[in-house]
Length: 230
Image 1 (tube, rainbow, N blue to C red):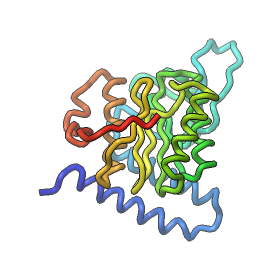
Image 2 (image 1 turned 120 degrees about the vertical axis):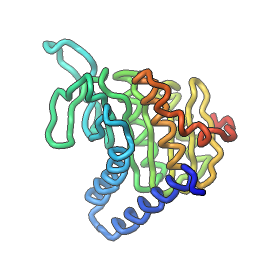
Image 3 (image 1 turned 30 degrees about the horizontal axis):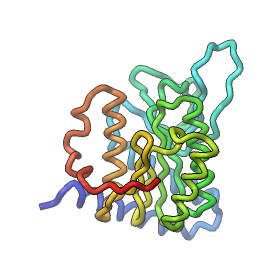
Image 4 (image 1 turned 90 degrees about the vertical axis):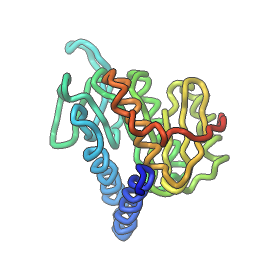
């Protein structure tokens, strides 16, 4: 019998195959953009239709006469398009007011230490604009050791604040790290990091929409051992 874990494992294998093919592209910016698109395509397929997946910028909710500061461009934005429209939209690139944004995701091909530091900074900026926005880091390939990830997270908590740390860090074939309140946990994985990532997103979308039944079918995926990380 095929389980949800098996199903999302096969999707992860397909994503990794596409990323391996893209590795032949020598232009790093182009390769990075294509990697982001791989994750966006997955989310567009499996996120409920109330939400739209794109890329772009977040601005704080202020009066139209006030000057505002944009976030850096976020690789993947998930926003509520049922009740909100982007302030600016050009193709998939949007500028969204913070109250419409459910999640901001930074995508890395490989989670090098420097790439992790950059992603942590970008998520912290978004959470400074609106702490209700869920922030995630997603990487297709592991690189940074566990000790390096712990060090970077500790530094980010000291530089910004604990609540500005990402809500989850997902590395295919690597770590899955999740923040719950004021504790960051390392989550036991069974080769199903993508399923865990999707489950966490579905939990956050369900909380946003006040429809807990959205994630009901995935509870067994989240039942595993959590170890305090920092």
